[in-house]
Image 1 (cartoon, helix red, strand yellow):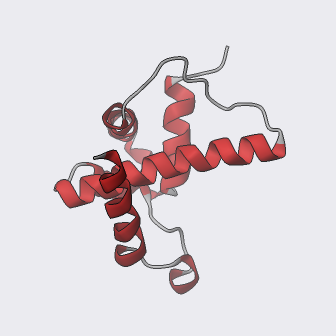
Image 2: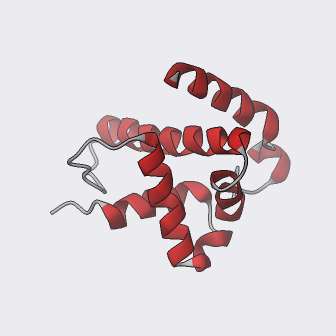
Image 3: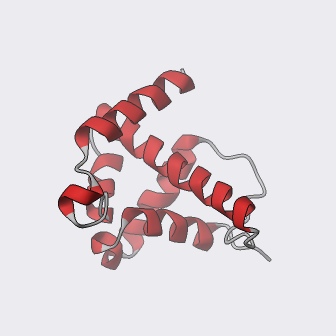
Length: 116
């Protein structure tokens, strides 16, 4: 089931978003992501895939470049819990709505799971 969600999310990202080169701006703003994360099931799948992609990309870059961790998740979390962390973060501070969604995903996890 998870593989199906990932595949559908990948197709949604390719088909439903304007490319950076075409728009001259972010792939998506936090406002776009918030709508997806609180929308219908198709939008929700996009949101889950986006959040997982940002977190996976952060880990790959961190390992490749030797950066310190920005956040430390010490417990297993589900995709749905990750989604709720991001939605709650946006709802608590709407100033993020015009920021790049990838920065907000990372900021939400830094706040929720600080490294000690």
